[in-house]
Amino acid sequence: MASKKFQYNKSATSRDVAKLAGVSQSTVSRVFATTDGKGVTAQAREKVLKAAEELGYRPNFVARGMISGKTNIIGVVVGEGMGPFYHNIMDRLISSIQAMGKQSLMFKVSKRDNIDNIILKVIQFQVEAIIITAPAMAKEVQDLGVESDIPVILFNRFIPDAQFHTAYINAIEGGNLAAECLCNSGHTDIAYIRYTQDTGEETEKQIGFSAGLRRHGIYQMQIEKAEYTYESGYEAFRRIYQSEKRPTAVFCTSDTIALGVMDAARKEFHLRVPEDISIIGYDDIPMVQWESYDMTTIRQPYGELVDETLAIIQSLQSKEAEEIEQPIIKMIQPVLIERSTVKQRN
Image 1 (cartoon, helix red, strand yellow):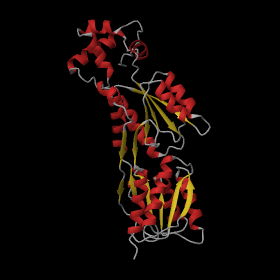
Image 2 (cartoon, one colour):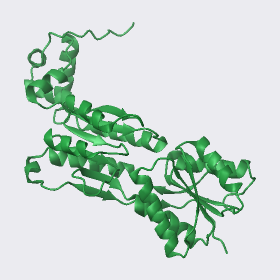
Image 3 (spheres, helix red, strand yellow):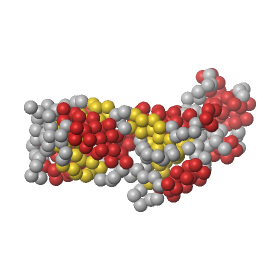
Image 4 (cartoon, one colour):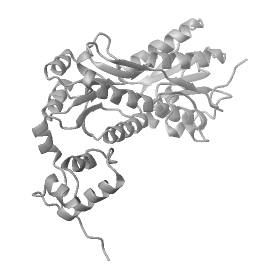
């Protein structure tokens, strides 16, 4: 027998559910406020859900938000060129937002869009906070964040002197870790493949990597640019290795790029990794852990990044929020993950 379909009844109220379930109206609210009904006994939760099913009740969060002024919606602004790392991180972020009893509303900024206009659209939805992962911000956005009294949190983006709350991974240190690994392994002829766009994160990676090389007396490196794709990384390595001076090591600012680089080295030029060429990636996505790659990389602790971002939001919504006078800045350190794609040279 087919299961009975849920029939939505827009006239049913939480008061009706509470009466039928024999619980208080606040208990009904708590059951639907979070995904796990936190703060409610399993027995009470079962009664409420059964009564709601029988009555055809579902809470109207939009109407509730209009009355209370609290929508439980977090606006998330993302940019273009998101590789597997950011897809993973967005999945973790959205799941964590929902675990807080809130929902996310995502807005995408393309290369043609003005991020100021996107922020204006986000504000119109009466969100409680705005998380921005986009690569650029203008002064007008900063003014809007203050005037609308909506907190703006930069997610893995750090803008010096900007009055935004920020949680980010130290990309300068990430670049430095890669340089130290290669230099300590005896490499001097090093290539660097970075993302095509001049984002703040990419700039910081290059600052850290270049500074690390200079400390070891290396002042020149081959530089290529690539999109955050396997194919673009493949082609970037072909260009590098067709030049007169061939490197013994390559640092890629994305694991996705590095995967393409590694396959190009092996298939196009029949190089052995790491015997003939060493490769370091960046992010530590699941694919680089596969046995066929087993790639040394710089891990971005995105779980910690998500937790710190949401902790900022919780702090700003706490009773002590009025005492917060300066932007909250949370910096997270990346980690070198050594696998089998870097060889010690004599």
